Length: 201
Image (tube, rainbow, N blue to C red):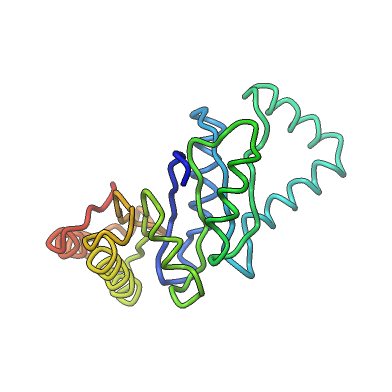
């Protein structure tokens, strides 16, 4: 395995914003903080991140305005767009290693955009090779229960037994309306803290 840091935003609940957060984190680290990143889009069959890149490339190819903006942006940050590899959960690790081996500029961080269900083939195996897993939560009882089942299973069956190389498993709130932040979040965070999971602010 390579020395790059492998990161996934993962949960067993779909539609909670994993792909959006993956794209935002990758873009921020690459374009603003100066890290070299890559994304393995293994959210088959949606491939949202890969599809977004294809859409961006289509816009750039068809418009001199967007082409000029892109050239200016890449000239300013002194590097190309980060690599996005279209894959699936079964082949994600092999595809990541193949991409790393062929890249002239090795990524510091490789993000894996995972499917929204643990039942997809290869998901648990791929997640077990992540250095860090970030799990989104929303203030919905079913989402919280599902997420806590996932992180508890992953920690107890894979991390504590040494079957996963994961160094950290972190939860964070997503889809939060600042006007709605109420005592419910505090209650959830107390329960989550009692279970031994950190919640990012």
